[in-house]
Structures are given as C-alpha cells and as structure tokens.
Image (tube, rainbow, N blue to C red; front, side):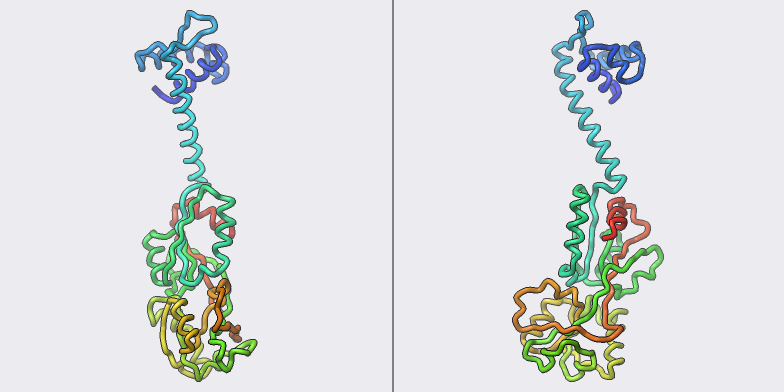
Length: 296
C-alpha cells in the first residue's frame, strides 16, 4: 500500500467513478482499476461494490475512505512543513546575547521578525562574551549578539556584521559634582573610584585591555573599585554612591525608576562599543538564513 493508491481510492470514492478518477490523475482507467484492486488485496477487504451504478463503497470502504483522507491530509501537512523547514520558514533559532543587551532594541526587532515568520521558534540565552563565543563554537547557539572581546571574528569560518554602534556614557550618582554636566571626558573621572563594567567574564580579555588603554590615553590609571560583568550590581553600587562607571548607552535605554543615578554621554572618538551579530558560516540552519536575510 502506498500514498498513490490511497489518493486513487479517495478520488474514486469521492467521484463514484473510476473513469473520472483516472482523468483527475491523468492515468488510464485500467491503471487506476488495477491500483484499487491491489489495495483491496493488500487489505484483504472489498472496498468498492462494483455491481452498483454508480459504484458505491462497502461498509469497510466507508471506514477506509475516512481514514485514507485523514492519512493523506497528514502526509500533505508533513510534506509542507518539511519544505517550509528546508526553506527556513519554520524551525528554531538559538540566539545568545551579552548581559545588558536585553535593554537594546533587539527584542523589538526579533518581535518584528517573529510576526513575519511565526513558525520559527526563537529561543534566547544571556551570557558573558566568553560564554557566548564558546557556545557558538560548540554549536550550542546559532547566532550571538556580542561585543567581540575575544576576537572571535578573526576565527576561520566565522561571519559577522555590526548590529549596533553604541556610544558610551558615564553612570554617576545624582549627588556627584559632575552630575549636572551635559557631556564628560574620560579624563574627568581620574579622581573617582571606578566600577569597571565589562561584558567579559575575565579581567584580561582583548576588550578589557582595549578599554584600559583608553584610561591610559586619558593620562591616568583608574582607581578600580570593582570589575564586574553584572550591570545590575554595578548600578546598585553607583546608587549607594561608592563609585562611577563607564557603560554602553544601550544598557540603560530601558531603565525606569532610577532615582539616584544619572547617565551622561562620554566624549571621544574611541568612546563607543560595537555589538556584532556573529554566526558560523557552516551553520546548516535554514531558519538562521531567514534571520540574516531579514536584516535584523
């Protein structure tokens, strides 16, 4: 028994005619008659009463007609979903993003993508930059949104594009002497205790070294009170007036009810953080290709 036999039988049953069913499938009446006969022999059941005009289904044929229609509908659905998955119109995308990036407009862009591709499941995971890089290389994530503190982008087989060019800002407690300034320079912070906000889980990553050099360029070594990749903890310490921090502006865009902290733009051509969308060239996930082409 095969799907073609089921289709021929359903056509014969719905049209009450071997001739019309044969015309529907562009085969001879003899061929479709033989296929139905083979189907009956396989089932060892008579499905059609051929003595009647027009032909009628036997009681067993009535049951099999309903079941055959259901089988064909399910088979067509399976074929459709398989083709959709092959074209990237369904499936799953595992997305990783660095801590703090949930406050950017990433969620709004993913929401727009989901509306256009409702059959693609988007799963999201938050981690530091080293964790994201490792999970991408281990095929545990399909794509990550990360400040490339590990120089992952220079690895063979890695693809990337800039997702956001974010200016840096200074987070100060509202009673700080510089809290009323419209803009600040890194040099203005030389007398302050600095809370280092790093997306890295390490203290000597490529990215951390880059930003430490910016302090050197400003003419001083910072008085580092704490290094953390947890922005919530950094902001809490600023709120208690223990220090100040330089943080990317995207990480505070959606903050509400911040009573004792102000955020002031940081001047300087190097005072920015680029977030990259990074994925493996060898990814075989067609749903990811949809996301990339979508231009999110």
